[in-house]
Image 1: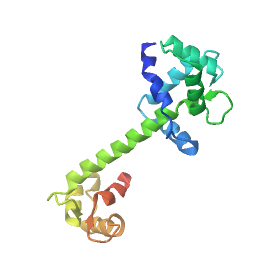
Image 2 (image 1 turned 60 degrees about the vertical axis):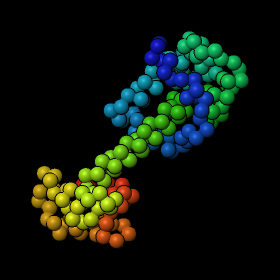
Image 3 (image 1 turned 180 degrees about the horizontal axis):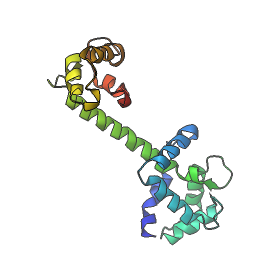
Image 4 (image 1 turned 180 degrees about the vertical axis):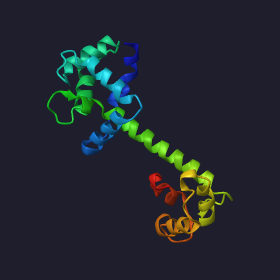
Length: 185
């Protein structure tokens, strides 16, 4: 049960900007299909709390689980946590509701990773370090990729001008590079 201590009472309490609705369901589905383990860990935590295997957590089950983990609880804290987790106000917490803090963190981490990918791409393409990518730098940066061997230089330029260079100034900014769907490259 030591691994369950990582669920962190404070993580559950700090929920003000947690995900909701379709955004929550979409993020949980993405987590489930990803190779990362957050979904599995959260599911194990949920099952730990769900003593009667109903698929829902009651306030009593949640309190009992927290006590097993060594947390000291009081009615006011439990009421607050339950009110934050129980989005539909039915007095019980479903798994997807339980996932809110984890899903929010997962989504934020994915956005940070995407930014790191764009940072690396910018460093790769921007050969003269002027903070922007010319069509020539773009071509040189992509020309070493084996899967693009059969693409002509004119095709690169066409893509650059008609798709990537959103403001038409002849250069890609960080934001323009970030907006390119990686599947297209």
